[in-house]
Length: 197
View 1 (cartoon, one colour):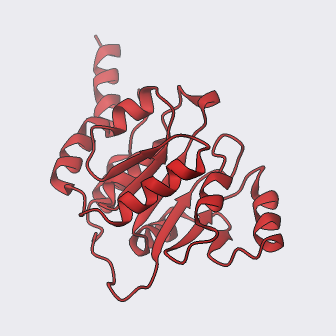
View 2 (cartoon, rainbow, N blue to C red):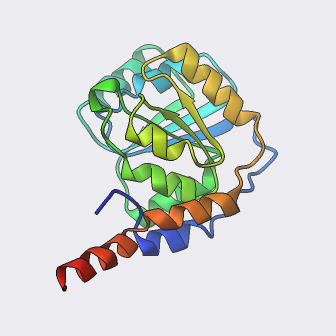
């Protein structure tokens, strides 16, 4: 059964409004998940630390959390906050507030397909991904409103964030249609039918 999105999460997330408050001065970026080595979130931190155009929330736990917090404090990075893990319903509220959702995996994990990205796309928000060539990049290239940068490349990340910030809203109808192929229960049903033969 391939990575994808649970039916109940899909149904809730596709109802999120993709409209943002136009009075905000800076674009809100949210990352949710493991704060570990595979995600190398310092790429995002370094990309926004001197910019007034972006505010970032990193939500989760992991091996790099203490390092990121220390770096933010030592370098007086005022536009990045690290927030502890939260329940899924509270996380949905963070998705609602965001304009851009972010994820990255390094080349060492090129075969991974992060489940969280399917959730991101279902929200109707713009998505920026640092992905190496591999199955994840191949899959998510089909969706509207997804912007890529080279993993670990700050200049490339800045370009992708600015492109996303200045872009039109994603084609949500197209994305919802494509996402239906990644609803887990659909694959579970097919798998169970095969087993019962």
